[in-house]
Image (cartoon, rainbow, N blue to C red; front, side, top):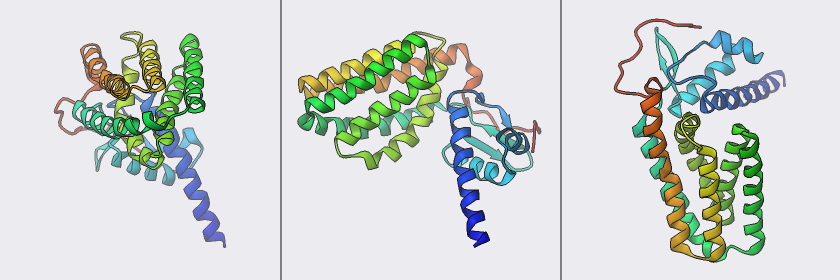
Length: 239
């Protein structure tokens, strides 16, 4: 009984830790290329090293962490190739889902999407970046859900990780939140009008905007990006 209880506790701790670490990486609280320490993270989060170590391994599987034995653990830099792959996956799945949704969406469902847009507008006005990106995920997931493809969101969400870091890094460059909101509004407007081709065109344009953003950020913050760097060769803040 005690072992089962301990296992449940460990799993719960790991779930909390991985969610927190993933969020810190995605919102750039932990910068690309930074070294991370199991000890420091465990102390900050009030947990043992075990769930931290497990979370770092899982995040390495997502491409967000790089682990070099005898050297250290690092937040991966943004890889433009990974961003391109992630965008390809999202575009393929979301546009296919959207084409189905245009044929079935009703006024009530349009209202649900517009409610999310209204909340995003408030987030833009208050410059609440975290809330905006939370609603961004909610909007895209809701559209897939309404089309009957919510189970595919796991794949899309995994791909979003690389894209979201690039988008967040672009925030100081231009009115990224305002542009994204306008693009979202256009997509929903096209859905409402029942124009399949125009809705798909708007979604593709929106999803491809990240390539413009990433070029802008690379010019100003090249240290965030992978450029064929070799593995780190010295220890830094090791656990």
